[in-house]
Image (cartoon, rainbow, N blue to C red; front, side, top):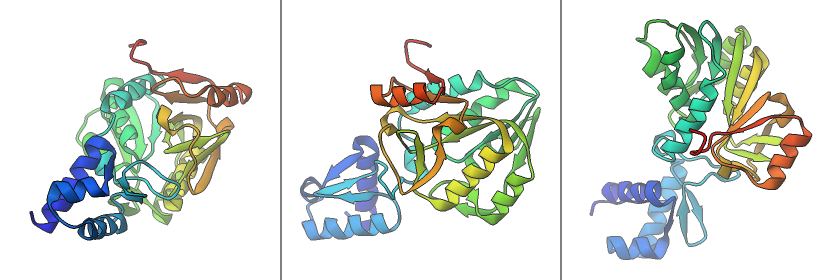
Length: 257
């Protein structure tokens, strides 16, 4: 198997399994462990995975978030349920901000059911989906394009967001611990902060697996949000923090749909 084909196969395994073992990979592909080490090193340098002891993962870490293309393929049902719960906050005629991320992109696809709307986003997947839709006044925030996050960031994006105003902003996060909300990339954080500052209401979208995790940067306190939406009941200590902060939690469980 050629090197590029092997590395693609490693990424395919990670999408399915979320974690791979170095020795298993060497046996599977019939190459040395040193060869697999080099493959994982190069994929990590490209931002595609995170090396851990004895293997690699695409699970978020303190300084790592997997590529948008792989996150987009994961946990589709949970993301759809969360997006449907978020959609209940939107009424025709509103101005809605949506940030980057694979979960947010699913919400963006659903917005056509609430038109007419004004939609402000730096999420390239949402821009591509809504650009030809009638009844959607799409304001695509420009800036520097990030392949990893499939969105637009930087000074141009931040300044554009600062000059706009929305009824509600939907902000997603890869980590939340205690009352603090985290992200590993400072460019992404600044765009999220600009949206938070420009919206009357703020809703946080977070997968239940991301509770009690941290990342490199704190970008918000939980009490900056009017609502938190997740896909399953979070740990008891996480719910207690939300209760003390008087921030409602909506669990978009399978049973509720």
